[in-house]
Amino acid sequence: MSPTLGEIIRNRRELAELPLRQFASMVGISGPYLSQIERGLRAPSDRVLDGIARSLRTTADVLRRESAPEEATPAVLAAIADDPRLTASQRRALAEVYLAFVATGHTDRPGS
Image 1: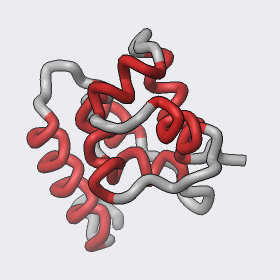
Image 2: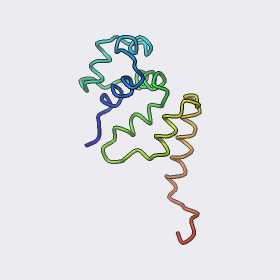
Image 3: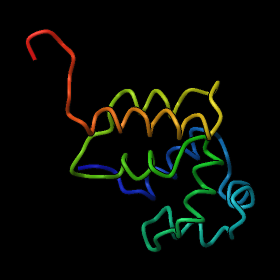
Image 4: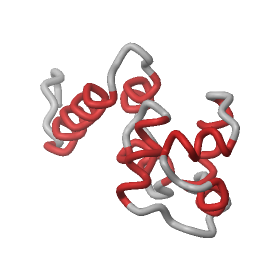
């Protein structure tokens, strides 16, 4: 079973060694609200999820994909999301380009 969006957010926050209150302040939300998101009691708005993603140095799309039960996160997207050398906008752009190529379903491999 895939982790929930809240579990992913909590895990990434803990990996970054950020206390809940400090992280909530970085995002611009209250500690109790972040706690409810992490426990799956509330779904974050797009604005809040974008703020959470920026603070975690990833994108909202990557967080959503990681929590999607029907599809596994490709290693390429995970590598993009975890590369500290990239800015948030670079991560978004690379992820969008990768997903666009994958969505076409075309391959240039011999025998394909």
